[in-house]
Length: 380
Ligand SMILES: *Cc1c(COP(=O)(O)O)cnc(C)c1O
Image (cartoon, rainbow, N blue to C red; front, side, top):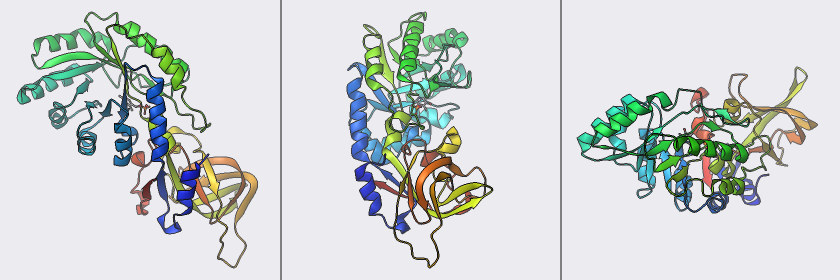
């Protein structure tokens, strides 16, 4: 599963450079170009920066996407500095006044409540700048069986509050309604995502105001149990064809499905031991660098990268043709990256390369717990 170019890059890394995150920028470029090509030309593709905001990643994506969605003032400052001319949309729950102030200058602002809308109006008036608002709505639409629904009500505006929001906009000369934003679920298959897109557009057409834009959100699924599988972008793109015509501009803002495939986390096996009837491989590394499997409750897919050198004068601790649990170096039983996964051979001193580590990986990890050194970062 590890690509030949990443494999040869990792083979040239000395042990002292590990743990390491290695990213395949050429692979990322090809992947996002494929996504763009699968979508109808009039559907905008934005990238949700929170999936992986690393600057080299942003720079590759900037050539292909129509804009970047940020979810905090920190992301806004970071993306603006990295990509000075790329359009930005600012979303996210519980925005501060300072964030609303900073957001006045962006392309679109996704608003989460009537109170936030009023505060944005005050910020826009202070800057004497009209702001273009998408109301983030959470209509009660079925999201399909593949999905993890966004917890009902925490994000966005209940449809019952829509008239109040429209009224606030009508009375405030600095607020302009650009459209509706939705992000209702994650982990969707293309079939479920397409059906949901149709439901959202149908719902938007029932609203009592003209709507020019609909942001359908992200949430395109990444299958961690089957790393070779991909969200069916051609099928999804075909299903979107024409559904906004002639008056609705459609936009999507995926994160995970864009960058997950371009990153690997590589660590050295410190030890292999049998204990309590199970076999454990302990890494110099762990979930403080790659929290994804704990956050999502899956086994992170991995490749064993054999290292033949063995300098100790005693037999090498090894697992041969057996199921192995791969744990890290934290003092907590939660520090497990994969459970009871069959391996042909895994020895102390070998390396393990975890795939699908390009999204919600390093940047969601509790990296200071136990004060281990940070990984090194590579963009090949
Ligand atoms: C996180 C998020 C996204 C991206 O979701 P993915 O599952 O990474 O595609 C898009 N829009 C909003 C509002 C989000 O919160």
